[in-house]
Image (cartoon, rainbow, N blue to C red; front, side, top):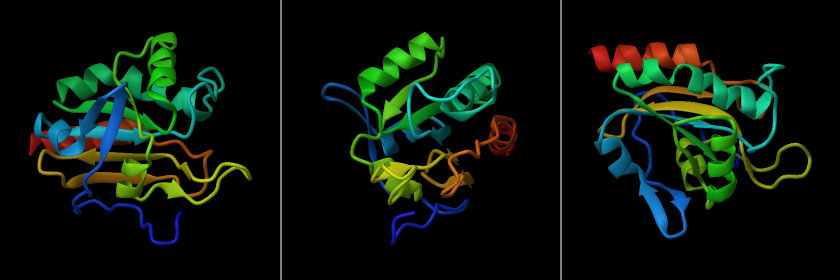
Length: 171
């Protein structure tokens, strides 16, 4: 992780950030969560990994997508986040038949806010967000936090995230 970054912990309030949906189309974190709790999950790259092999970014985003109806029933929206361009993310989501949004953290604001920005990863990428999953309540409080740290091979567990989501909305 970057020198001053600490992975955001449950019970803390996430710092302000914005994500990019498209040209001149930004989503402000406080406005997003005002409409209800959100599970933000971070992945390093679009068009990588394999659902078939259960590895990498494709497995991660499809794993959350497979439980999307259950997240929705629990009253929690799911948003995938990476540094890729919003146009590549939109195309990849469509290619994978995922109906939840993949938003671009093009300026690393969200990765910094959640403390999942690595100084360097895979020997070449500076910086790069690691994997993470964070359930954020309507007041910006983090109800659940998970980070893969500097191990990009670890994937967040969508079932654990769903259990946290159900627990939050049942309270």
